Image 1 (cartoon, rainbow, N blue to C red):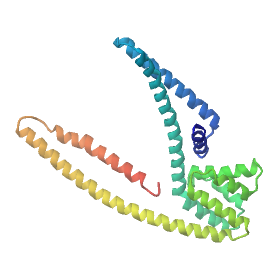
Image 2: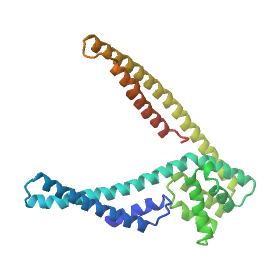
Image 3: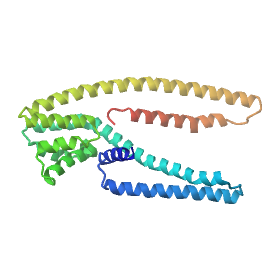
Image 4: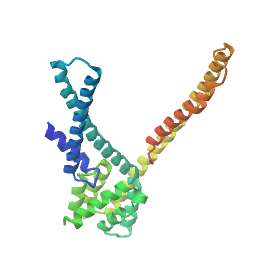
Length: 272
């Protein structure tokens, strides 16, 4: 079971395209888990020492067990962070993929060789996103450093990609290119399909933003009126001599609500 979890963590880690090897990452993770274990036990021992709490056999057994539990949580927190980064990279690739395919279609219409397409994409991280550029650079490393042909490199690279859409694209290109089909027609079909999907996503996003904005403005307006009434009632009752609630609404509640709504908008933006 542990071996399977470690292998799954390795797969997620490698799809993040890190500079550090997985073995080094695992070694550091184990060291951090051990440090967390010792720190937890030390804190528990200091707590018992300074509080003068009675120490019995059960307490002595629970201290290392609690340290093991906290160390295990630290390990899984590191593993979860890797999985989250992998999913985040996949989402970034999916968001920019339609634009990259449009560029590839333009190059295919100009008869640019397939390897040169990915070489150009790898140099345009500022335009199509550094994550797509890294995926393209990985394909080039398989051809230049490992010595694979382009089709084999595409099939190898797709298995280590965090994006399902990118994997589907690479598999399709490998099949079309390997069978002598029309790469131009394939890319044109993929571009049209992803463009239609992107338009639908943008339409749904705009509709959700309109609804969210209406709800937010209504809540802010009602809350402001309600807080003003409470402030007025407290002033009339002599419980309050200033506009503290109004200032709290203006300086804390409204900015915090606006921040949360903006983060929600950015998180669901299909162009993010």
